[in-house]
Every structure is written in C-alpha cells, then in structure tokens.
Length: 172
Image 1 (cartoon, rainbow, N blue to C red):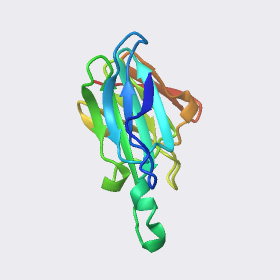
Image 2 (image 1 turned 90 degrees about the vertical axis):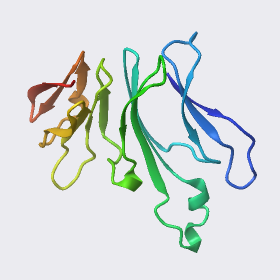
Image 3 (image 1 turned 120 degrees about the vertical axis):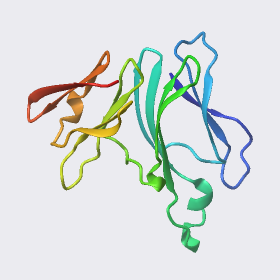
Image 4 (image 1 turned 30 degrees about the vertical axis):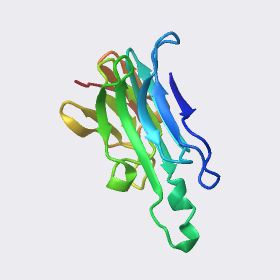
C-alpha cells in the first residue's frame, strides 16, 4: 500500500508538505519513500505490486514553480519512477525524472517478484513500445504497438500482447 501523508502545516501560499509512505501489511510500520515540497502532490500515478515490491510512477508540477509561471517560470513538471522493497525501504530501480530526460507517464506498469520493472511507454508517433529496467539496464523488450491492458508480471517474467500475439521475457 502507498499513502500520502501531510507532514506539516499549510504555509498559506503553496500548501502543506507531504510524504509518500509505503507498507506491505496494515500492521507494518510504513517506510518513508519520498518527501514532497510544500504543496506538491502527485497528479499522474501508476502503481504495481508484487511480493515485497511496489513500483510507482508519480508525476507532479512543483507548486512553487507553478505559482510563478505567469512571470516566466518554465519546466515545472517532474516525476519519481521507482521500484522499492516495502519491507525495508531499499530502492531496487530508480529512473531519471522527466526533467532529466526520463520516461513520461507510462500507460501500463508491472513489477516482478524480484523488483524489476516493465512499462508500456506513452503513445508516440512510433507506437507504444514495451520497456524494462533490470540488472541488464534499461532496454526495449518490444518496439511494436503493445496492448497496454495485456501487460502482466508472472514471477520473474513479464507477458504482453503485440497485435494479439502473446510474448514474454524474463527480467533479472
């Protein structure tokens, strides 16, 4: 489970700070995953859970930057794309934010039981490729037009359909 908790008072201008917390069980003490600045809260969210791991993509605009867009502030958007062990808070995968050239909001996301991730990229002129990040680095599993609704994790493998044809790959 992932939850967003207000961690301080509203400053009257940008809003209150928040922390992203996660846990596997209701009785478990949550681990702190990320601290958001005043007023920042995710607007784009994708999540996946398997065993002790949670994978998530969170996208948001810095509220302090957004407040000054009329004065010329630019590039206010950012993201957090990670796979984390919710038992101990260890980050298994961390991808660059959109500000650093990282992926945009995926149309589908899965995490394997080993904490590796695969995602269907947002639609582009070249289609919707399937990408993955594991011990081999970031790579394209299928460059074609992937059916985002078909993406599944099965143990260490991911399964998907391209043009109605089933495919799979092991991540590790």
